[in-house]
Image (tube, rainbow, N blue to C red; front, side, top):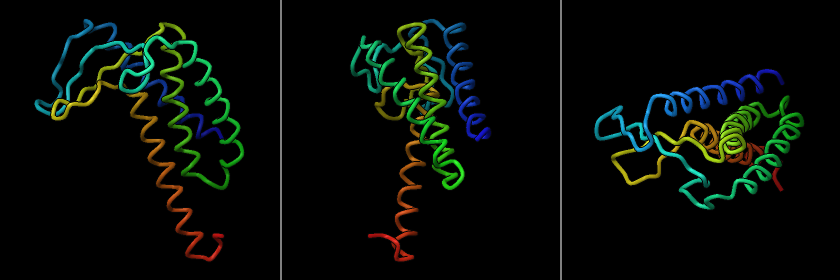
Length: 156
């Protein structure tokens, strides 16, 4: 179990460190190109969820995220020995969710900084990257398990 918590803590720490750097060394609205024409750092604050929806719903996010984090802890304990890919995916989701949770709980907003410049896409942060990566791994794992069970004749 410890290895999954280490993954979650590393994801959380990376997210918090990058957010701290952006908040400490960039002005809000400042842009710094990383790869010209592809991605840049853009310092903004978001009081909502993905794509800026549900602005100023701090209590709602704190309650929902608390429930999700508790659920992940219980489910991770249940599956960690038999479903390692799913356990790593949940650890990434946990670390990312915890990063945004801490920001909302302490500051009422999250620091977003990653902006794709080649498409019109909302600015996001590393916590979002970890959450999305975890969700993609959950989907891949679900499809893999489903195909494996179907191929072995165990599906209903």
